[in-house]
Amino acid sequence: MNEWRRIRLPMPAQTIAELKAGDRVLLSGTIYAARDAAHKRFIEALDRGESLPIDLATAVIYYMGPSPARPRQIIGSCGPTTSARMDKYTPRLIEGGLRVMMGKGERSPQVAEAIKQHGAVYLATIGGAGALLSLRVKSAEVVAYHDLGAEAVLKLEVEHFPAVVAIDAQGSDQFKIGQARYRSK
Amino acid sequence: MREIQAVAVTAAVARLAEEANYEMSPDVLVALTRAHDVEKSSLGREMLEMIIENVHQAMSHRKPLCQDCGVAVVFVDVGQEVHVTGGDLETAIVDGVRKGYGEGYLRKSMVACPFTERTNTGDNTPPVIHYRVVPGDEIKISLMAKGSGAENMSRLYMLKPAEGRGGVIEAAVRAVEEAGGKPCPPLIIGIGIGGTAEAAMLLAKRSLLRKVGKPSPEADAAALEREILEKVNRLGIGPLGLGGSVTAMAVHIESMPCHIASLPVAVNLQCHSARHKEAVL
Image 1 (cartoon, rainbow over the protein chains, first blue to last red):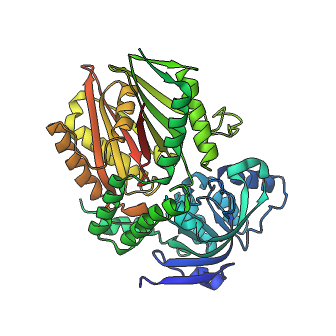
Image 2: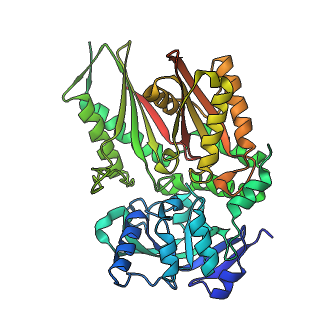
Image 3: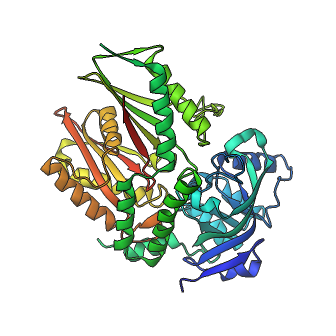
C-alpha cells in the first residue's frame, strides 16, 4: 500500500485515471516550473488567443521558483510553493488541456471541481524540502518569460521526483481524507 | 562609548543570512525527530523522514533548506553605550542582507511597489528591521529568514476582553485550522497576547526566536501553550496537511499588558523550516 509508483512522463491518461488520493509517486521525465507571475501571463496569452510556451495537454506544471544555482550545480533548492495562489488561474488551464499539477497545500473547491470534471490530478510534494528535491533534478533551463527571474518558466528533467496524489481524477482529496482520519475533538 | 564599525555589522548580517538558510538549528532538528517518533500517520512519518533528510542534504550540498529564503526579518538590540562608526547602522544591516543573499546564492523574493508593478528588487532588500535600545555596550542581531507560505497565514484577532482565555485558545486553533497544509506543518505557533494590534504581532514574531518547545518562563503562559498545542494537534492536519497527529511541534506565547477595552491576539505561524541565527557584536 505504501509503495512508491514509478511514472514516466508525460503521464498516460490511463495512469491519471488509476491514481488514488494518498498514492505515492516517483516522477521521471519533463516537468515545467511556473508560479504566480507566469500563470498570470498564461491567462493573458489565452485571452489574446495566443498559444502558450508549453503544451498544456502533456505538461506537468510544478508551482516552484528555485533559489539560484551555485556554479556547477544544476539548480538551487526547488521545493513547492503554495498552490492555492494559483487557484484563480487553474480551472482555465485545466479547460485548456492541463491534466497534471504539482505543488503544496489544499486547493479551492473550484479547482477540485475542474480536476474531477476533466479527469486531471493534483500532486503534493514536500514543502520545505527544496535541497532534497533538487537532487532529483537532472537538468534545468529557462524556456519562457526570462524577465521574471525566479518566476520564469523552467523546463526541468527529473528522475524519481517524489510526490503524493492529493486530489485524484475522481475528486477524492487526500487533505480532506487524511485530516478527517486523524481529527479527534 | 564603545565603537563598532559598520562593516562589522554588515559582515555579521551577511553571515547570519547564509547560516540561517543552510543550517537547521539543533533544537528544530530535535523537534522534527520527536515529531517523527510520535506521528501516527505512516504518510506523515514518510513526509517527516524526507524533511529530516532535507536538513542533511542542505548542509552537505550548501543549498538552502527551502527555496523560499524569505524576507530577512532582523531584530536588533542596540546597547545604549554603543556608537556605530564608519557608516550608519541601518545601511550596514541592509548591506549585510544584500551581501548574504547575493554571495550565498539565496533566493531574492522582495518586490518593490507591492500593489502595482511588483518588480523584484534583485537583492532581497529591504529587510524588515525591529530595533530595541537596551542597556550595555553590545549589539545583538537576530536574523530570521521568514518564508511567505507560513507568513501569509498570519492572523490578528482583536478579541473582546469578555472572551478571555477561552477566546485566545479558540483564535489560535482557528488560525491553524484555516491555514491547513499551506504553511508547511508541522508548525511552530507564535502567539502574541496584549499590547496593541502592532505590538501583539511583534510579540508573536519575537516568540519564534525562542528555542523550539522551550516553555514560557511564566506558569500561566506555559499552561496555555500546552493546552493550545494539544488542541491544535487534535485537528488532524498533520505533516504538510496530508493528515496526521502532529500539526504543530510547539506553541510559543509572549504577552504584555493592554488597554481595559482590548484583548489583541496575534498568531504568526512558522513552517517546519524554522530558520534564524543570532550574533552579538
